[in-house]
Image (tube, rainbow, N blue to C red):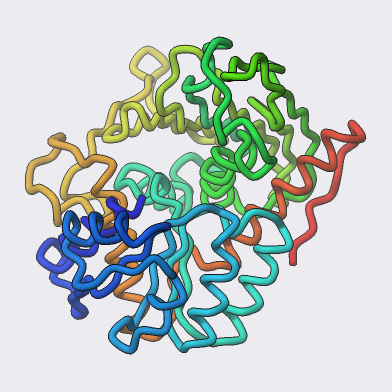
Length: 358
């Protein structure tokens, strides 16, 4: 993610003609040698093995956090104390307590703060948000979302850092993205029930079978504050799925489908006209859709993963230039962390739980 953000900050000015043009001043890594290698590769003026050195540097006017989850809180609070806006990769820390502390620090500082949920920024999903806001499918009655991948579907895949610690499990790693998406599309969740499981209890390691210490998949049943019902499934063992960030939404006047593996298309159904001619229309994204034109003038040519990160950089710079928050802020990240914490509680006792809104 450090590379993705470095590339985005170098490209965002020419692409979006932003008022602010970033300069890559300092990059931090876990060792000086690694930091030096990254600085040369990505175009930073200086490298350091201590993130505190980066935050304190007077030439650094904003900080992007693309480090492990358990470092997010310390870096963000130090940056706010130094008077510097912060963009933090998801999730907002390694726990709900981290997310609460980071949000409090951000809001107390009055500085621009954003959290990185890149997939929700595709031109396609931004367009879907517009369709829903405009009432294109009427009153929404049901939502189904998923984030499914298969990078740990093979039971013989070895144990790694990903298979230890709750923050590295499926709910900590993958779930923040689709939860952010459903909040953006559907609004707040009132209550939920959940099941969270480990599919493969042990994995090979040099010392023999190693116990897997976190979850492989989970499902949530949802009741949104709007009254609509919903379901969310998250998995890192979904054989055959590579980037199954997908959703389906039903309304009283139509329906919408989207799948990130086909990220440049939205499928829209309108319940109008004769039954014989009704059907889902495949809409290919193009210059008429949000943030597309900066990349290409041709409809259907498409955008990709790196473009999502560039759009994030544009939004961060726009927020800094205006001195105003831009969605999603740390508080939006806190809302995601709150749902994850509630899901674990619901999975433990098997009951429906109200979702606190802090």
